[in-house]
Amino acid sequence: MEQRITLITLGVTDLPRSKAFYEQLGWTGQEAEETVFMQAGGSALVLWSRAKLAADSGVADSASTGFAGFTLAHNVRSSAEVDDIMTVAAAAGATVTRPASSTFYGGYAGCFADPDGYIWEIAHNPGFTLAADGSLTLPEF
Image 1 (cartoon, rainbow, N blue to C red):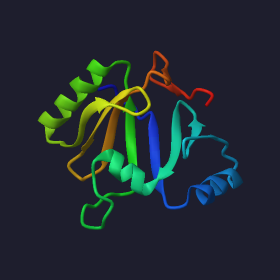
Image 2: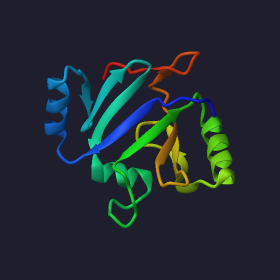
Image 3: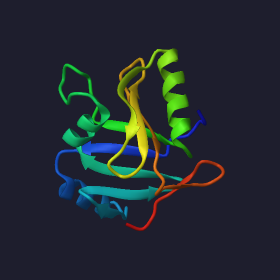
Image 4: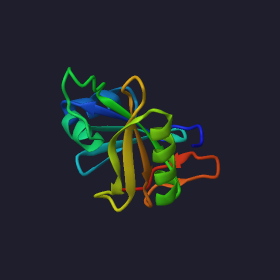
């Protein structure tokens, strides 16, 4: 697994309010399918419904699960790479919260929790370009 974070997704309770907040801070983004994507250097900040983020990550959004309301994503160049990283993570002690499978956006992804419960998504998204150094450039939506 290359040492990088391509996306940080914040699970928000009110998307329009959160989008307006970040815009007032000077951030700009694109909204697609009830999700806001903001380029942040070689990575991206994403705003998405907290409930949808928890469900997509394979965890419950409750105090008892310890879901922190955000996920870290590591985008890769192929579905096979997703499978390889998920296998290595599980062997290292990660809890697989969503086995790798095809996604609604035409990609392939899986999620795991690290020993402290932080959720990582390992994803191949053919619509997201990764440079040779692993940096991400968001497409125009």
